[in-house]
Image (cartoon, rainbow, N blue to C red):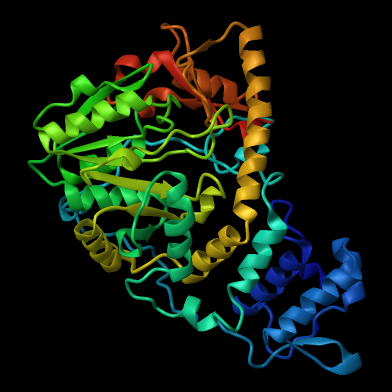
Length: 470
């Protein structure tokens, strides 16, 4: 039978191309059983007129579906649902909903929810002023070269490499670039077996916390600090010491001798963006050496230092091998990439590799090779340079607006970064402020989640993401 043209309609919220949306309409109809084998689709001309798109767009979509065996073409007769098209197995579902009789409060041995994290609306694109931290500006990103690298990564020459189960191994091309190019720029020398690819910095922090900490251990982190790290540390069951932030970074005197692991963001402290001076980095290393402590350095946003050159990484001046280094491509490429790396001594890397293998084996091979190509062909350096220029321009615009309206910054030692840490009057609850501003189309991120307690939440708010606001 013929499929009525009225069965097709465009989704205004769909963010892909028109061709992809038409392909999705057809494939979903086939897989869901609405379009049956042998059914005839509307002509390309009729469907194009109905959807308000060009005829060539519909034709290209149908051609792709024929290649994927969803449709078959019968000369001048048109397009039909293929008899070998994929089908979804339909199971019999009970007419009444199943009510679980399990006491999940008792069954869950170790709850992981309930941690205070940042609230990021899924529809932040729809707001006129989305000061949302950690999102990508599509106008800056190099779509063309990224697409070419992704296609190249699935070429016949490397297809078996990137599609096979590598078990515990990482893409050798990506590891080679990190060792020969990325790390030397941070003053770090490492061997390939001292580097592990992770699913972003968050995954790297989880691996470090899981391997280095347990009940009875003590960890120290910055306050205010990254909420995701605090959640990880609480999951390990360790005791947490909160290190206050000064104008030069974390307060070293607050590190107790009993601390086992210190977590720090020397390049751009999260969330204040304060950069730790070289002499204080040396003092931190000396403190850790005196107490035989391990430091986990999250080299957060080191690329986004547009007023001067990035300071050397803490690990670059470490002579005892006690610094574990974490880097990420998610901030400089795009957050959805979820690709980072951790660098450390071989015994440590061996343990985190084993843990990663048991939980997720390895990050997707195709994504690793795409990034490796994007890096090695110079596209990444060009993108970072373009981002630095744009961020600097937008920082100047925002700084002028902040000064003009008499608003208060909470930190001033910020040579870069993609956010501004603001201070509200003591009587202002920034969570309530964020709610009121959202109603007016403005998104900000309240500072409460960054603090270890509620004592200072009325004083700070994160107004972030220049690349969104610009």
